[in-house]
Length: 358
Image (cartoon, rainbow, N blue to C red; front, side):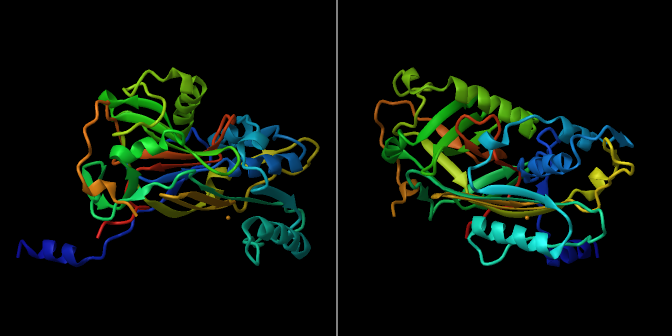
């Protein structure tokens, strides 16, 4: 009889882990959950404040998230990808919705826009935000078809599909992959993958083992490394090589996710604006995010909506091989050159968005 509970548990269907989302980069992350963040939510909030003539004079009761959103400073024109995003504000009318969806469809390339109206009460202000960006690596990486990656999250290891490069082939990526940081004693490293589109890049960052880090802190580290990176710092093919060299190894799990988040309850406080007799209150604040990372590049969408080098042994030339393994929780950012913040980020804390290896 004692075995009965185990037999019952074994027959229960597996419950898919939930993809989380945050509205501000300083919000805490769960180390073992996949979480997304994009400043599109901030841009939508800024648009709402601008519609009311500026930031609220008073928030009752005090609201930590509203305070963070109201004090966040950034330059959206340099952060967000040009012509691939927009925010709209206006009255809750069918005419305004049709105009927004028509412009949104031009950005996404789809026949229809994604937005809808729920509150049509007089005096309501509706805000819509859209980000849709696809980037491709300057050189396609390689898919591992025979060897799985054991991705470790907490005390669990799961075999997943991955892509990357190793051995002699790595030197072919010396002009397209930058090494921002390599700290093997801390299992910490960061890579910048150059893309074909304008000044976009994909940045992979594995923080030091055991160090809790939010998006804001991770961005601060990456900003520092990007400012100090220079190809002229090349000192051979050792630890300090700023570009990828032969016998370096990269392993990155495939990531594909969709996250839906309702922030309404987090923004429930009354907001009092100058020259407005009645306070304002959020009745709906939703965000939907899609993201995919693979050997050819990445694609992010947000709405407020064949060589197999892994199967053979590497050669042994007299160089120092480095291992950039993303087999434990890590950050992924889509980030324009010269921008202070990325326009999309995800903390891959578990295997919820990965492909199991079969």
